[in-house]
Length: 340
Ligand code: SF4
Image: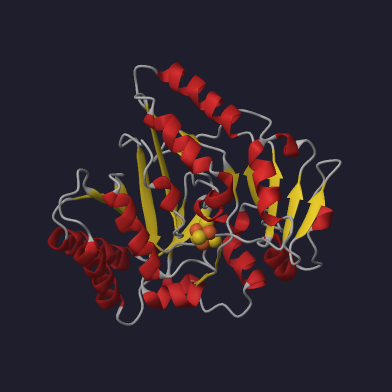
């Protein structure tokens, strides 16, 4: 669970139940600063004069606000829309794709008006009838470590569970799923767990849940009947990478129940980076050992006009062949969504 150093309540947010719940839970803790805003200018309350400090202070800040504009971002190709319940994440993964998206102080913001957001999603669903509309709950966040006090996922799962023309999905590196296990989800919510090898987690995924705990949480949700999947990302090539990724897949399979209703899904993404991301990473993690040498990579223009450095084609091919073969051999009831 995310325990912030400071909580900032936006103007008018305390009229919502979620905000009251959060205040009640944390108000008597001496080491948590509570700030009530009379305007919505919160940046001055997050300390730091340099990117290194601002990043770390931002990651310790929880903002409780209200989602105002109700136009949802699209979320192709995995879903139709992003569901804007939460933005930001308590994790400090060095390679995180959010490092260049959330500003210099990457705070965690929870929107207290969940009901309004879900009502807006109903409008989007109705516009697309009779087609099914898919919402992604983790496009710019990891919503799980704040779930114990937001209950946002719970509300969303119940809402989409009750609507046969919708589906919901989110991905996490955390384990606060107990309150989700007994909900009437109707198989409409897919929960994916982002995993990596112990070597990669230890070096690069700071402030995330331990691998074993993530796997245990995934077993719990699969037993609770949720469609369950694994996002293996980012895949790195290093000494013994094949051995360690194979061990990871076997470890999952060894404890996964065998009679699941839905196939276990796999999404595998090899490591890639942009120049902007590399520069940012070197500012906030100056000691980083992330391998980002342009001469070892292949530059490729992406769909949004900027380029990324990927592993060269022969390495990418090796990654694809390796994961395809291993997943096919190790798992019985599975669905490989993509390996890129
Ligand atoms: Fe980014 Fe996910 Fe790590 Fe959070 S847990 S910092 S969203 S990679």
